[in-house]
Length: 517
Image 1 (cartoon, rainbow, N blue to C red):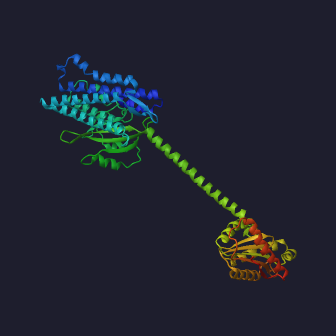
Image 2 (spheres, rainbow, N blue to C red):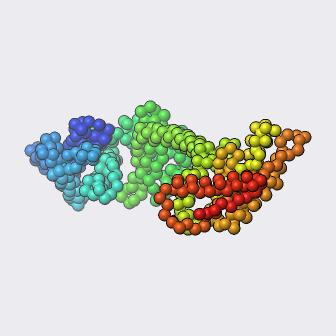
Image 3 (cartoon, helix red, strand yellow):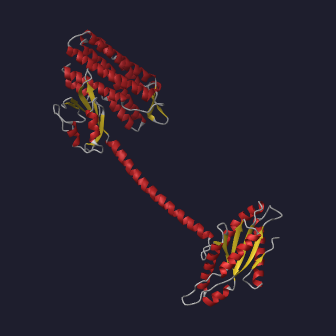
């Protein structure tokens, strides 16, 4: 019985294919021999072993031995073969596997028939009780094994995988056989049967009766708990000595409920090899459905818990790194935003630079001309700006440029674009603006600049400036298909530049409207 859980465990932990197939074969050899062994056990339990000759008892092992031989030889991969993705861990089964299952099913049916025949034959009540107890074990093993076959083999693509059903069936059936042997004194080989069934699994097992008296502590659990057969324990006090993340109350409510339920909790035993244990408490029912005891299993989940904790720590590290990356990404984004803004902005006045304006106008003007959308361009120059620099210095001159740009921004609409054209010259692009609107906005800007008082130094009179401005309004064009936008823009700025110099030659502080054509 030890071969099945040991082989299953080893096959899932092994990484090399040759070791995987070896452990899988070992597990199924053990499973094949369990069937014949249980049938032999049923014959002895029913008291009919004297009717079977030695040759007959040997012959009943032939189906199991042939199945085991097929598992060992595995001709043409008729037993198992690996998949391309999962190897032998996600294996496919062949005819020998189903022959083994059929043999196991045959032994199970023969065992049931043998036990039922013995039960119907009558006899002492003690004999009937041990037969019933063994029947319960077989009836638990068969459904769990069938569930394992259907869920994990036949319909594995459609159903979620549930590992260990056959192992659980072997465990629970074995416990029933042990109880039959222990309570009703079936054989004089009690210790051998207990070791073969209970000690063959790699799970800690504690069996107690309805009064809390310890009936069995298997060798896996014995080194980690200070319990002996015959000790009387209170499950609440027993578990309270250990550390646990969950609330013990929920476990005790399920444990003492009526009807009793399966209870689960995870505790910390504190040992290096068996540090974390998952505890499952399952009730054992008598033939009248009364609780006669409980099976408490201690599953070693140390590696699983360490893997979960390691995964949590790695997730925390990754989250910290993600937060750092997000912060760095945001800082880079802000820096890029600043760089982009610096690339299109005049550093002194804060308005757009000439390069950005010309790039925008190449697209805007094409659209305006194509769809006959009116627009206007202003080009203005601060009058006698050189005198300000010569009189007050360049620091004051810079302040005059900044203040003038701020005043113009306040007079413009949100859709208008102000750019420093060069030196003391500024230009304004006004979309969706006809001639009358352009003249009105030009007057507003000119008046706002003239009324702006710029403080220079404490105790000195504020400075004010005027501007000369050229205005070009484009409302209609004969050709709405422009082949060279840059040449067209040069023509427009040439016209508005001519208008600006006419304003300067005309005495400054005035607006001149450029000719559209």
